Length: 319
Image (cartoon, rainbow, N blue to C red; front, side):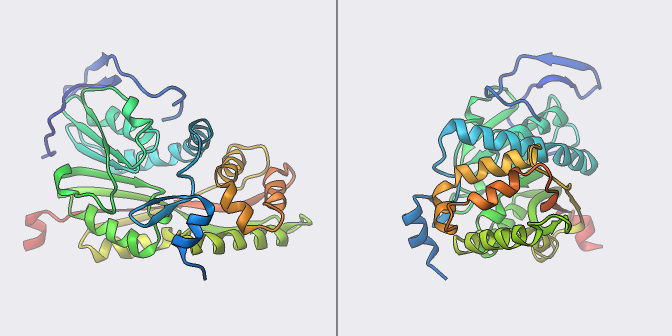
């Protein structure tokens, strides 16, 4: 049985629990169109935002620029995320948790699936977008998943996390997985999506090797800030380690080139993290930007790795 929440209603054009099409007013944020060094000392020099002693490389970005960055990221990731959630299944009446919700596109998608008797709770340390969403089934919560209590959030039938754990590093990411596993109702499921670096480029391009060196240099630099761009391969082991079962995984991505959405997102991300980029590269990032923008240069940088699992039911545990 789905965990029942306090909020009731539906969103946009969705089906109710009897399968009938419903249409209720809803509001979403403007622009949401698609569903060696001490890290602390280093980040103080770079002016990065800290949460629970973890540095978020995009945390001090102006709203307009961060909106553009997240919009491009949503365009790249949302189709994969929505397909995965549909494949995993979101039963009518489910109580869902979206952690690190960003602009809320995944949370809004969950609202279309959980029906009139479901609820979606969306959390983030930066709630400037999700606080604008108005819907009786939806609750936005300013919450630091590393430091704030999770028990008050309740139990959930489905928990979704996307591109969060890699931003806080392996050790803290493992702590978050443990905390979230404890918020699953019996039989509840969790889906976690994280980047996985996969350096590859068209070998016929004159700057293929230079690209790999530059990207590796940037990844090494972000590791010093406490990030982990290889978190995707850690996920199956982590979910097993916290007692979940029915573990599954996949990985998706594409070959990209200058001028496509991925490249636009990458360039916007570098602009958002310009202080860190200036510290990392002696040319201020000019070379890596030029290769990202090169329409004749095809490459793979990030793949989107996903792992899911379920909390055993009492019957399964005792059998």
